[in-house]
Figure (cartoon, rainbow, N blue to C red):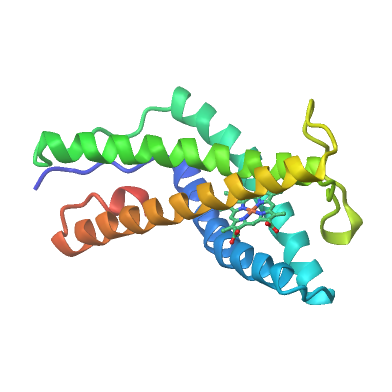
Amino acid sequence: MTQIQKYPIAWRVLHWLMALMIFALIPVGIVMAERAEANLWGALTNTLYSWHKLIGFTVLLLMVVRIVMKVRLKGPAYPDTLPRHLQLAAHSLHHLLYVLLVLTPLFGWAGVTAYPALITVGGYHLPPMPFVPVDEALASRLFGIHGALAIALGVLIVGHIGAAMKHLIDKDGLFRRML
Ligand code: HEM
Protein backbone atom coordinates (compact mmCIF):
# COMPACT_ATOMS: atom_id res chain seq x y z
CA MET A 1 0.00 0.00 0.00
CA THR A 2 1.33 3.48 -0.84
CA GLN A 3 2.11 5.80 2.10
CA ILE A 4 -0.43 8.66 2.10
CA GLN A 5 0.99 11.96 3.35
CA LYS A 6 -1.14 14.12 5.64
CA TYR A 7 -1.86 17.84 5.40
CA PRO A 8 0.32 19.94 7.77
CA ILE A 9 -1.10 20.04 11.34
CA ALA A 10 -1.91 23.79 11.26
CA TRP A 11 -3.90 23.22 8.08
CA ARG A 12 -5.87 20.33 9.64
CA VAL A 13 -6.65 22.28 12.84
CA LEU A 14 -7.87 25.25 10.79
CA HIS A 15 -9.95 22.99 8.56
CA TRP A 16 -11.90 21.40 11.44
CA LEU A 17 -12.20 24.65 13.40
CA MET A 18 -13.73 26.40 10.40
CA ALA A 19 -15.94 23.40 9.63
CA LEU A 20 -17.42 23.71 13.17
CA MET A 21 -17.94 27.45 12.73
CA ILE A 22 -19.69 27.06 9.38
CA PHE A 23 -21.89 24.24 10.70
CA ALA A 24 -23.06 26.71 13.35
CA LEU A 25 -23.30 29.76 11.05
CA ILE A 26 -25.66 28.35 8.41
CA PRO A 27 -28.50 27.12 10.70
CA VAL A 28 -28.10 30.09 13.06
CA GLY A 29 -28.23 32.45 10.04
CA ILE A 30 -31.40 30.83 8.71
CA VAL A 31 -33.15 30.78 12.13
CA MET A 32 -32.30 34.39 13.01
CA ALA A 33 -33.31 35.69 9.54
CA GLU A 34 -36.63 33.83 9.87
CA ARG A 35 -37.20 35.27 13.36
CA ALA A 36 -36.47 38.76 12.01
CA GLU A 37 -38.87 38.16 9.09
CA ALA A 38 -41.56 37.08 11.59
CA ASN A 39 -40.79 40.21 13.64
CA LEU A 40 -39.74 38.08 16.61
CA TRP A 41 -37.31 40.47 18.23
CA GLY A 42 -36.01 39.71 21.71
CA ALA A 43 -33.04 38.37 23.63
CA LEU A 44 -32.76 35.11 21.63
CA THR A 45 -32.84 36.81 18.21
CA ASN A 46 -30.29 39.40 19.35
CA THR A 47 -27.99 36.71 20.74
CA LEU A 48 -28.18 34.70 17.52
CA TYR A 49 -27.35 37.82 15.45
CA SER A 50 -24.49 38.79 17.76
CA TRP A 51 -22.84 35.37 17.64
CA HIS A 52 -23.49 34.97 13.91
CA LYS A 53 -21.73 38.27 13.16
CA LEU A 54 -18.79 37.55 15.47
CA ILE A 55 -18.22 33.98 14.25
CA GLY A 56 -18.79 35.02 10.62
CA PHE A 57 -16.21 37.81 10.90
CA THR A 58 -13.78 35.36 12.54
CA VAL A 59 -14.25 33.03 9.55
CA LEU A 60 -13.27 35.93 7.27
CA LEU A 61 -10.10 36.59 9.29
CA LEU A 62 -9.25 32.87 9.38
CA MET A 63 -9.69 32.73 5.60
CA VAL A 64 -6.85 35.26 5.28
CA VAL A 65 -4.64 32.91 7.33
CA ARG A 66 -5.85 29.95 5.30
CA ILE A 67 -5.12 31.58 1.94
CA VAL A 68 -1.61 32.59 3.08
CA MET A 69 -1.12 28.99 4.24
CA LYS A 70 -2.36 27.58 0.93
CA VAL A 71 0.05 29.79 -1.01
CA ARG A 72 3.05 29.06 1.27
CA LEU A 73 2.58 25.42 2.30
CA LYS A 74 2.17 22.70 -0.23
CA GLY A 75 -0.58 20.19 0.49
CA PRO A 76 0.13 16.52 -0.23
CA ALA A 77 -0.27 15.50 -3.88
CA TYR A 78 -3.15 13.22 -4.84
CA PRO A 79 -2.16 9.57 -5.24
CA ASP A 80 -1.87 8.33 -8.85
CA THR A 81 -4.68 5.87 -8.07
CA LEU A 82 -7.17 8.79 -8.09
CA PRO A 83 -8.31 9.32 -11.72
CA ARG A 84 -7.31 12.64 -13.33
CA HIS A 85 -10.91 13.83 -13.79
CA LEU A 86 -11.62 13.31 -10.05
CA GLN A 87 -8.42 15.19 -9.13
CA LEU A 88 -9.58 18.07 -11.33
CA ALA A 89 -13.11 17.98 -9.84
CA ALA A 90 -11.67 18.03 -6.28
CA HIS A 91 -9.35 20.97 -7.12
CA SER A 92 -12.21 22.94 -8.70
CA LEU A 93 -14.59 22.28 -5.78
CA HIS A 94 -11.94 23.29 -3.24
CA HIS A 95 -11.17 26.53 -5.08
CA LEU A 96 -14.87 27.37 -5.35
CA LEU A 97 -15.23 26.73 -1.60
CA TYR A 98 -12.39 29.20 -0.94
CA VAL A 99 -14.07 31.84 -3.15
CA LEU A 100 -17.44 31.42 -1.37
CA LEU A 101 -15.79 31.36 2.06
CA VAL A 102 -14.39 34.82 1.31
CA LEU A 103 -17.37 36.35 -0.54
CA THR A 104 -20.08 35.15 1.90
CA PRO A 105 -18.66 36.83 5.04
CA LEU A 106 -17.57 39.89 3.00
CA PHE A 107 -21.19 40.51 1.91
CA GLY A 108 -22.44 39.91 5.49
CA TRP A 109 -19.91 42.42 6.82
CA ALA A 110 -20.79 44.94 4.07
CA GLY A 111 -24.51 44.48 4.95
CA VAL A 112 -24.06 45.17 8.66
CA THR A 113 -21.88 48.19 7.80
CA ALA A 114 -24.56 49.65 5.51
CA TYR A 115 -27.46 48.91 7.90
CA PRO A 116 -25.59 49.73 10.32
CA ALA A 117 -25.63 46.90 12.90
CA LEU A 118 -22.01 46.31 13.86
CA ILE A 119 -22.61 45.37 17.50
CA THR A 120 -21.79 41.76 18.47
CA VAL A 121 -21.29 39.64 21.59
CA GLY A 122 -20.62 41.55 24.82
CA GLY A 123 -21.19 44.92 23.12
CA TYR A 124 -18.07 44.50 20.98
CA HIS A 125 -18.39 46.43 17.68
CA LEU A 126 -16.96 45.12 14.42
CA PRO A 127 -15.01 47.67 12.39
CA PRO A 128 -17.11 49.14 9.57
CA MET A 129 -16.15 47.95 6.09
CA PRO A 130 -14.25 50.80 4.38
CA PHE A 131 -16.07 52.68 1.59
CA VAL A 132 -19.52 51.21 2.41
CA PRO A 133 -22.06 54.02 3.04
CA VAL A 134 -24.86 53.82 5.61
CA ASP A 135 -27.88 53.04 3.42
CA GLU A 136 -30.67 50.69 4.50
CA ALA A 137 -31.80 49.84 0.94
CA LEU A 138 -28.21 48.93 0.05
CA ALA A 139 -27.99 46.81 3.23
CA SER A 140 -31.06 44.85 2.21
CA ARG A 141 -29.55 44.10 -1.25
CA LEU A 142 -26.22 43.10 0.35
CA PHE A 143 -28.03 40.75 2.78
CA GLY A 144 -29.91 39.20 -0.17
CA ILE A 145 -26.59 38.44 -1.91
CA HIS A 146 -25.11 37.24 1.40
CA GLY A 147 -28.00 34.78 1.90
CA ALA A 148 -27.77 33.45 -1.67
CA LEU A 149 -23.99 32.95 -1.38
CA ALA A 150 -24.44 31.19 1.98
CA ILE A 151 -26.97 28.77 0.46
CA ALA A 152 -24.63 28.07 -2.50
CA LEU A 153 -21.86 27.47 0.05
CA GLY A 154 -24.13 25.05 1.96
CA VAL A 155 -24.83 23.09 -1.26
CA LEU A 156 -21.11 22.85 -2.08
CA ILE A 157 -20.35 21.75 1.48
CA VAL A 158 -22.89 18.91 1.13
CA GLY A 159 -21.02 17.81 -2.04
CA HIS A 160 -17.69 18.16 -0.23
CA ILE A 161 -18.90 16.00 2.69
CA GLY A 162 -20.36 13.45 0.23
CA ALA A 163 -16.97 13.14 -1.50
CA ALA A 164 -15.19 12.85 1.88
CA MET A 165 -17.61 10.08 2.96
CA LYS A 166 -16.94 8.19 -0.29
CA HIS A 167 -13.19 8.27 0.45
CA LEU A 168 -13.89 7.11 4.01
CA ILE A 169 -15.97 4.15 2.78
CA ASP A 170 -13.47 3.32 0.00
CA LYS A 171 -10.67 3.39 2.63
CA ASP A 172 -8.33 4.90 0.00
CA GLY A 173 -6.49 6.97 2.65
CA LEU A 174 -7.63 10.36 1.27
CA PHE A 175 -9.96 11.03 4.24
CA ARG A 176 -7.12 10.39 6.71
CA ARG A 177 -4.99 13.14 5.08
CA MET A 178 -7.20 15.75 6.80
CA LEU A 179 -7.63 13.95 10.15
C1 HEM B 1 -18.86 31.98 6.18
C2 HEM B 1 -19.49 32.91 6.88
C3 HEM B 1 -20.99 33.08 6.92
C4 HEM B 1 -22.00 32.18 6.61
C5 HEM B 1 -21.86 30.74 6.12
C6 HEM B 1 -23.25 32.85 6.84
C7 HEM B 1 -24.51 32.29 6.63
C8 HEM B 1 -25.71 32.97 6.72
C9 HEM B 1 -27.01 32.42 6.42
C10 HEM B 1 -27.30 31.00 5.93
C11 HEM B 1 -27.93 33.40 6.60
C12 HEM B 1 -29.45 33.29 6.40
C13 HEM B 1 -29.80 33.84 5.05
C14 HEM B 1 -31.30 33.85 4.82
O1 HEM B 1 -31.98 32.90 5.22
O2 HEM B 1 -31.75 34.82 4.21
C15 HEM B 1 -27.22 34.57 7.06
C16 HEM B 1 -27.83 35.79 7.39
C17 HEM B 1 -27.15 36.88 7.93
N1 HEM B 1 -25.78 37.01 8.11
FE1 HEM B 1 -24.41 35.60 7.69
N2 HEM B 1 -22.99 34.14 7.27
C18 HEM B 1 -21.63 34.32 7.35
C19 HEM B 1 -20.95 35.46 7.74
C20 HEM B 1 -21.55 36.64 8.17
C21 HEM B 1 -20.85 37.84 8.60
C22 HEM B 1 -19.33 38.01 8.63
C23 HEM B 1 -21.79 38.74 8.97
C24 HEM B 1 -21.61 40.13 9.51
C25 HEM B 1 -20.54 40.56 10.13
C26 HEM B 1 -23.09 38.14 8.75
C27 HEM B 1 -24.30 38.76 8.99
C28 HEM B 1 -25.54 38.24 8.68
C29 HEM B 1 -26.79 38.93 8.88
C30 HEM B 1 -26.97 40.32 9.52
C31 HEM B 1 -27.80 38.10 8.38
C32 HEM B 1 -29.31 38.36 8.38
C33 HEM B 1 -29.67 39.05 7.09
C34 HEM B 1 -31.14 39.36 7.09
O3 HEM B 1 -31.69 39.57 8.15
O4 HEM B 1 -31.68 39.40 5.97
N3 HEM B 1 -22.90 36.87 8.26
N4 HEM B 1 -25.88 34.30 7.11
